[in-house]
Length: 138
Image (cartoon, rainbow, N blue to C red; front, side):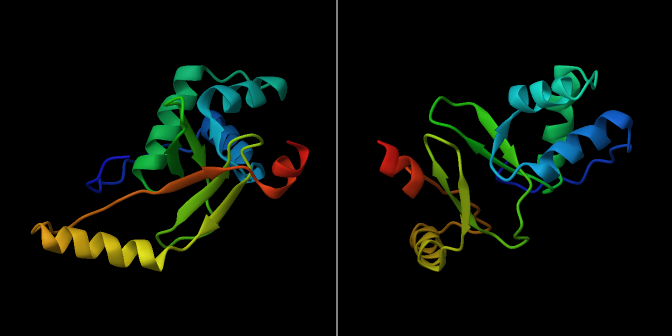
């Protein structure tokens, strides 16, 4: 996601867009474009992978989904429950995700930016580990 807020892009409410929205609403954890595309195909929907990528990018640009990059560099998307700025705790094994506020991170970010004369700053923070269930199975 760009550090600068992009103007919202208009996106028509097409059958394909509705199908992508439906999968995102039913998915609690981050999902890659490829996995979302596979979910659509398993439901009998014929939506091209390029359409899925474009739709997800527009949703991300408009702030309607959060994007994180996995350790392999792949982008994953999630419609979050929180509207305010937050971070994610993500299981490396099962991809379970918890939304967390980070007031200490926010204070640190402002302090570092101020120390170096930066203004209008933005940041992302994702914490990866093993959830309790996966850790018990390891």
